[in-house]
Amino acid sequence: MSAWEAAWDAAQPRLSALRTALSGYDNHRTPAPINRVVQLDAEILDQELVSVLQEPLNRSLVLIDEGWKGKFEPELTFLIHAALYKLSVWNSGASYGAKLQDLRYTVKGKGTSGPLTPSGLPRRVLLIHGALTLLAPYLHTRLRAYGLSHAWPDAPASDIRRRTWDFLVACESSYTALSLANFVAFLSNGRFRTLADRILQLQLAPSRPQVQRDVSYEFMNRQMVWHAFTEFLLFLLPLINARKLRRRFNKLTAALVSLPSQIIPGQSSRKDSAALPTLGKYHALGQDQCAICAETAALNLNLADDVNVFSAPRDGPEGEPPAFPVTNPYITSCGHIYCYACIAARLMDEDSEAGWECLRCMTVVKEADRYIPGKRYQGDRDDSEASDFGADGSSEYEFSSEFGENTTDLSGSFTSSAFGRFDRMSDDE
Image: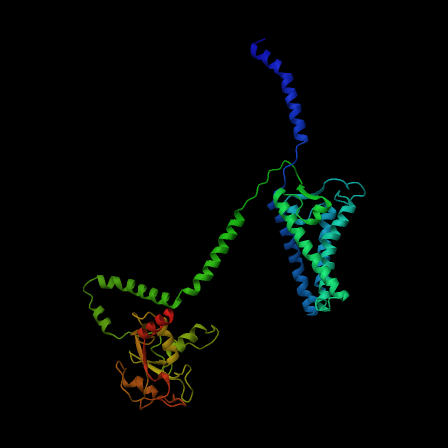
C-alpha cells in the first residue's frame, strides 16, 4: 500500500464527520426570501386578469341598461374575485398570477391542523383569508357608497350617522398606515406581501425548489423601445411641415432629372424648351376659380366620384356656378387670382426668402395685392385670362363688403417677407 492510499484511508472518518455536519446545517438553514419582484408581478397579473374579465361584462350591462354598470359594479367585481379565488387559491393553493411566476401559498406556524382544502392548505385559514381579501373590500365599498348617497359626512356631529362615518374614515386611515408598514417590511425581508397574508402567516414560496429562475427581458425591452419610439414620433410629426418637404423633394427630383440634359452639350431643344412658359397642374382651371381651393378639395376626393379637378375644363356649363369660386380675390405677383385666406395661408407657411410656387404657372410668388377690377397689375396675363372675371375685369360674382372698401383691413397688399417678420415678432412677444 502506497503512502497516498494510507493517507486517504486515515482521512475517511474526518470526511464523514464533515459531511454529516454540513447536511445538518443545510436542513436547519433558514430559506432565502422569495424575490420581491416576482411576488409583486404576480399581484399585478391577478389585477389585470380581473380587469380583462370585468370589461366585457360592464359593456354588456351598459347595453342592457345604462344604470346597471354603476349600480351593480361592486357585486360584479366581488363575483369575479370569488370565482377566481375558488378556482385558483382554494383548489391549487396559488392565484393565476402566482402560478405564472411558479409560486404557491404555504402556511407558517400554528393553525395547520384541521380540515384541508383541495390545495392542501387549511380550510379555516383560507376562509378567513377570503373574507379579508374579498368580502371586506366589498362591504367597505357598499358602506361608503351608501354613506355618501345619504349625506353621512354632512350630518351633525352628534348624529349616529356622522359618528359612523368618522369611524369608517378612521378605519380607512388605520388600514392605510398598517398596509404601508407591512409593505416596508415586505421590501425589507420579502415575506408576507399583504396585510392579510401577515395576519394568517400565508407566504408565497416556489412551487419547485432548487429551480433556478431564468427570466428573459427581450420582450419587455422590445416593448419599451417601441413605446419610446412611438412617443417620439407623436412629438416630432406635428413639428414637420409635410408640404414644404414635398416641395423640396419635387425640386430636387426635377433638378436631378434635368441634370443630364444640362451636362450634354449641343442640345438646342433645351433652349427652345426654356423659352416655353411653365404650366402648373392647375393651369387649365378657370380664372374665376381658386386653384388652392381645388388642390385642397383634391386631397379629400373620393375615388368613386367622377369629379377630377386636374381635367376640369376652363369654363363650366353655362349658368352653372364655379366649383371653387374665388372669395375676396387677391392677385399674386405672377398675375393669378386666389382667395385671400388661401394665398395668405400659403405665404405664411412658406419660407420668406423662397416664397411659394403658383399652382398655375409654377412661378415663385412673394407678394399679393387686393384685386381691383380695371386696374393693371405687374405680371398680368393676357386678356383672355382676365376675361374670365368679366369684360371690364370684374367677376360675374361680386366681391363686396357691407362696410365699404375703405373700411376693411384686406384692402392692402402683403408679402411673404412681411408675414415672416410678423411671425418673428409674435415669437419674440
